[in-house]
Length: 294
View (cartoon, rainbow, N blue to C red):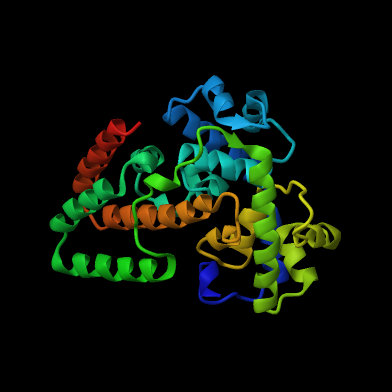
């Protein structure tokens, strides 16, 4: 179970499913706001985005970023967008203002983390070393313990320059690879945790018929981004990165998601251990670094 982002899957109660259904009412709005926020912070035009994809029009992406757009946002499109922008996909599930990882740290840290996806790993290591030197002995030990734990689960913070998205991403090929991986890994997840199809389908907000399609590696049908949020919240997972571990045509995307999770987790934890004034200063440093690698 640890490979899916937690050590234990809890039994999902009727109350938890009801709460999940209630939370879902604002998910489309949060995802739209987050996608739009990333575009603005990274100063991307829709014309530029249109050139980064094949198989989807810029006008469609634009609709997905309108909070009033009532149709679903396919999970593979949000995943592809996260790769192009180099922002961890889990951030889009909550909307940046509500993400629990950033709570109490202010909007500036959110903007900084949105910007630093392309900053080389060795530069991030230097940034973390600067913060580490500012910590007291207790905080240093706390950070080292945290780093040991997260790297034991997801791997080390390796160089990710070879994991960047292609200049033009074929959204249709990406979708086939993405859903094929989900089909294989979600079935494995269900069996490993003795989950009935009734339970897992209800947690994901799908009918049993829809869920059986999701588990079929030979079918490629678009599913809403909500299934990613629901699997994390419903089963108390810290990440869902390993559900894409079986991607064959775009294996770099899975590896990047692992590296991103480690990078962001370490930066957030390091900044959290600083005092408020020190944190503000280091966030400014991070913002300056991001400008060098746009």
